[in-house]
Length: 189
Image (cartoon, rainbow, N blue to C red):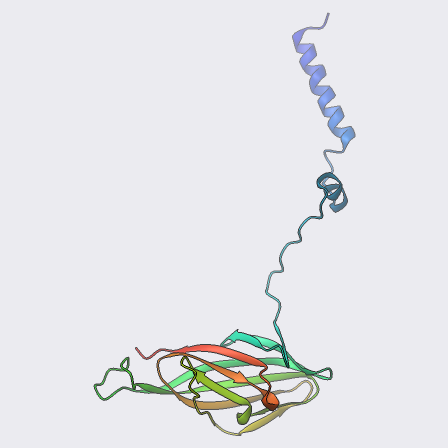
């Protein structure tokens, strides 16, 4: 007759032997998980968000400073980024308080495009800026009014406008077709 201690040792040895025979010590594989769960494991998300792609007919809405891959046609693509607005001088309303209606600031916005293939042209006439009410904010060139980036090169266009406090957006629309819209806010506190 086996003692209680012998039975415990025998049971433990049986469990360990069974575990080794079943492969419990080996890490699971995608195939073994799929077989046991009946589903494919969900992959881990990438460390960074993929860059959005803007095409004629499918423009991108972006935060100011964000980049987008732009595809103008099958042979012409690049990366576009709008930065700013770089506020210059705040001209407060007559009462001297910048947050009152009528307070304005002059600010610059920079559109930079690095061409990966083809030639990408920028022109002040291709930029439209609107405030939160939809009113157009006229833009003028600071420096050249156009620029062109050839494959491997970067072109930039700097424009200036007069803004009031609130939300606004600048739209790049080559040949009249919206390609990318950048949102931003002007604060006159």
